[in-house]
Length: 323
Image (cartoon, rainbow, N blue to C red; front, top):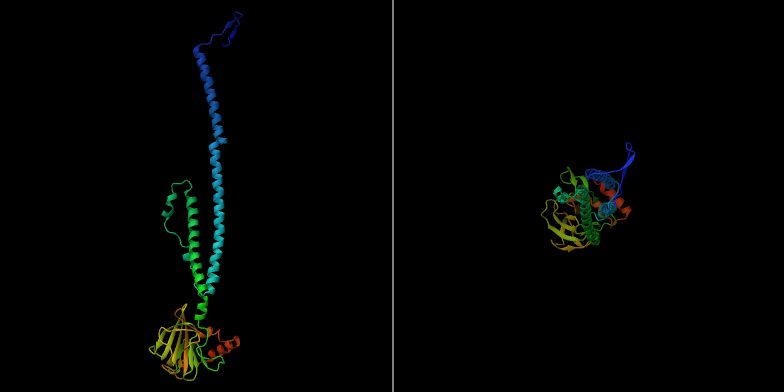
């Protein structure tokens, strides 16, 4: 039951019953309601601004977890990149040097993927740039790991072929010259014995009696055995694989035919003076990857350091070759 309200009338000095009309009641109700709405609106705004809803709290926790996982992912990728860089460095500067293989060019190791359309699938995401950078970096590391894996496969194969490589490299002299009695015409510019003009001598000359045995200086296959090359006379070329070939010129007689497989130290012919030659000797060349190199660097199976020094002095003093 609503309370009855009275008002004191100062003129009549009596209490009069207060009568509230419907419009007044409605106005009061609307006033109270408006004030309540204002306070409620302000409260809601402040709550939304400074307080998180349960859903927002859950989303915030998810974002923090994702940020932590992203940081851990980048940290792991940094660690992988450090290890990968070390593997690449050892591969190029240790393993491939040991097996005389060319390093893998950086243009291949660090080659890009080409085209921005590769990552356009992320364009509709809010963090598109972040997703693109992370995915691109992961793809690059994955490609570098694949290339390094293939490189190690090659290194393993080279290691398995190391014994064959060591047997194939020309590592002895072509005739029995351990006492160094046979004069050596050296590699380099010499006076031609017939034309008396300066000419580059691409091998070494070992003088010996007619018919002295000539031996293969490394395992290989006979690639040439004829007298068709100008100046060399009867000559033999052995293909040792791994980029190595050797040539033996001016033979009096050849003891092998094309296609024959020979071992280091096996007889392949006899000293002579066929072709453009002034005396019985064997002209010996070492070819590495198509380039003629100084044979004196390949006698490590035959000579002691002292003998090598003597051989080096003899070959450097020679001013004229035998062919």
